[in-house]
Length: 394
Image (cartoon, rainbow, N blue to C red):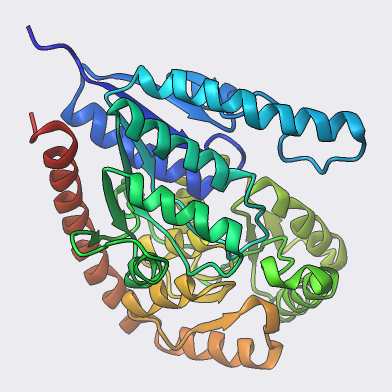
């Protein structure tokens, strides 16, 4: 009798980012439908949450539980250095037990937000390197990437791509970035973000209600010197926009995409001091989509906030922080409704939102059509994944 496949999932999962966990849910849905006898396990940043929420056997991504805290003394510096060494053996031992390891979506090959090379890029490199060593197939599935200028991070990401057994990307700019960094992408395919394969909640939004997705945005890797100024400008503009909506007696529902974003929600609620402004409490991407289904229009920043709004066919303005946001909006037919978070302009935002409302019926129909296309493309993606990793479907 053929042995059940041993399949691992890997990433910063269960760590508070709803988009990352939504990508995991999409892959788990595929695995449990196509390979119900597969033995599943996870090497993840939030092992307790992943174990409790998804029923997986989990291992912490890092030996040093303070990995993502800033080193503030000799002891913490020593622990970080020791952790890097210990994680080599830990990662190798886990990878060796798997037949296949899937990295589900996420911007794992990006450095659009502040990122140190010896953080997650190093962990991802250990995964790909040990996978190659032990013959475990590592698959980067519908991942995001950008061309990275920092030499150490760029080198690690290049080798992550080269050593992986399977690569696909969520947009053309991600594939182009990997090619520019020295990875042969001639056989790599582009598919929609994995979250487009998740179930779409039913129901129409409450007329007039506006969903506003906010982010604790401090700029990217090259903006560290101006991080506080960037954050203040972004938050002040979003405060002003929410106040403008309230002045028109529009109910506002605030959304987040990561737990760190709650500080922005709290500030907006405090400053507006209006019963029209409320905050969603979604803890999963599925819950977030249900929340967004209940509003009429959306203005959002985090990539997966924007994606959820588009998936439930809500006319949306995206205040993005990277080209991926612009690409997503263009692919969904809303290319004219974008701004950059770093330089978001209030007057322009009001103009865009007004036009969005005037064209809402047309835009909603476009979104419904694009969502159907995305769902079919992701069926193709999972069929290709089965062929590449398991020798075909069941």
